[in-house]
Amino acid sequence: QVQLLESGGGLVQAGVSLRLSCEVIGRTLRDYTVAWFRQVPGKEREFVAAFNRNNNRPYVADSVRDRCTLSRDNAKNTAYLQINSVQPEDTAVYFCAIGVPTLSIIREARGYRFWGQGTQVTVSS
Image 1 (spheres, rainbow, N blue to C red):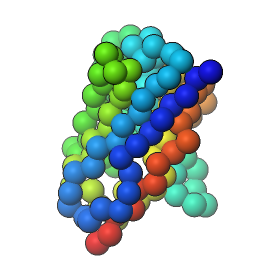
Image 2 (cartoon, rainbow, N blue to C red):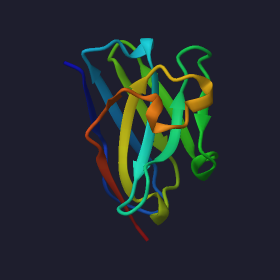
Image 3 (spheres, rainbow, N blue to C red):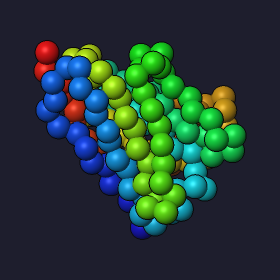
Image 4 (spheres, rainbow, N blue to C red):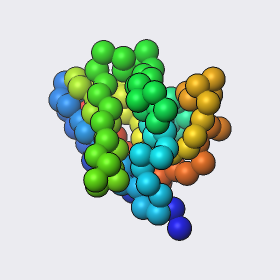
């Protein structure tokens, strides 16, 4: 059984850095592209960032481009998303996902087979 366990969300103040974790159970993380998406009520799931397994390059949404760092610890089978200087507009449920998308769909939810349950991030101003 494949599980993606997210952690690190919560209520934070604007301007701080936030690091989310995604532990993968049942699959080897390095075999997959790992991505982060976020969603607010009433809106579609939005791509945040992904780390491509083939070229080891990050792909980052414009909304977080200068504030986002992706990393992964293969020994712990865990991926991380850090967002610096969070703002109220970063408030959302954040999901991690793994898959083997082609580059053409690396920013699309349909490119990922396995998903975590999501972790709520709320940024107060």
